[in-house]
Image (cartoon, rainbow, N blue to C red):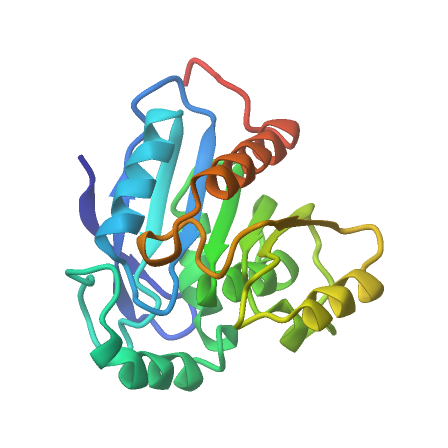
Length: 225
């Protein structure tokens, strides 16, 4: 359904790939999906197609193209974990790939939203405070506690699993203490509850509905465009 496109960083002119899924219904807005540590996986491309069916024009930028170009051909590969972690570390755990997110935002007509998962959830959190042109952001199990000094400029929704071994309850509590007015939702699920390797149907469904409501409440209504 989607296609591969090229985007250009305004920072240094670097060209990187992105998966684009055009809206198949009356357009609600643009959406940037920030991928998890595994890259632009088949699951994320399928997820982008699903959002496109709901009226969103979606871009999934390949945030690790500076280290290795191309999309992932599988959703997880434990044998590549060390390499992928190396990419994440080289990117400053998200801070150094915001130029790619910004390029994706600028390639979409407003309103533009962002959603991110794990590594991408952290990227989306940083984008909410540093990027221009976003209307709202949803972060799924991102490492937000590493960046409590950031201040979002747009409405943000956070999703976490109660049984997430990578993001302990103490981290979630530190986020709530730092941002008492922030919408933080906990689900009876583990890490990656939207992804195939940790999928929890009820948590994914409820978090998805809350994310769509966030977008709808901040400009993501249908139009004839």
